[in-house]
Length: 285
Image (cartoon, rainbow, N blue to C red; front, side, top):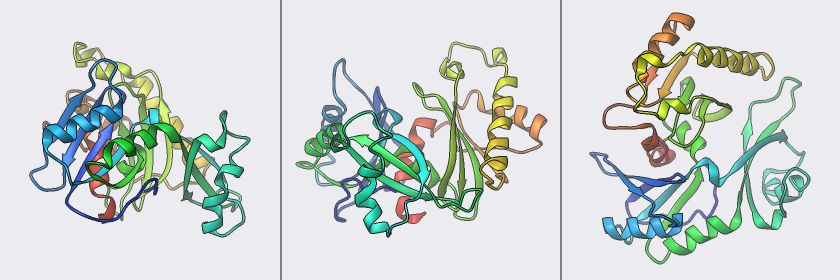
């Protein structure tokens, strides 16, 4: 996980997932229940966090924050030939021509990727606007300590066992469907699959969904990852989808790919709860 604003260890942990419209929180101790807080009209994420902490009386707790996709962007580049500690400092200059705003206004970090087809070392660079994250920190730190903060797609990697080589389909309301390759607890590749916002529409009957396009996009993504990127094909598939559509997607995958896809969600754990749970598992992954 990235190290933005990482602080010292202290008390028990609360993990919170920040989407564009709501917060989803899970406490470290069991049983784990998901606490949802919808934003008031015009309310900022920082204000909503303060309100949630006050309502739940979490003052003094350690907080882990999983950031929704509106908070960050990611790109992949060849790894510059320099020591890792120097690379962390050099990222703003490495990325200067690849971003559309002053690097002084951004925070950068990276993760290593599998070696490319030509034997080239690669990294995925994550960057975020500094001000929104600084506002979160300023709002929380008088009340709680921030244990770590990072992208939701990296938090999801902690949900799989270290020996699993998996493909995860994840759909959060308000975000596009994403497909991610995860191996040994590490993010390897992801792709946004557009055109499936209807999965969030609870008024739409499940038998109205046509999954042919989804299966085609999955096959294209897998072919690209295994053919162009030379990644190992996943041997396990996981679904983080609305519970009402999961059985139909499992059936479609079984019929086309002859794979039994396992659901990460159930009647108690929705797709929006998983990044928060993944953050809780960070130190165990």
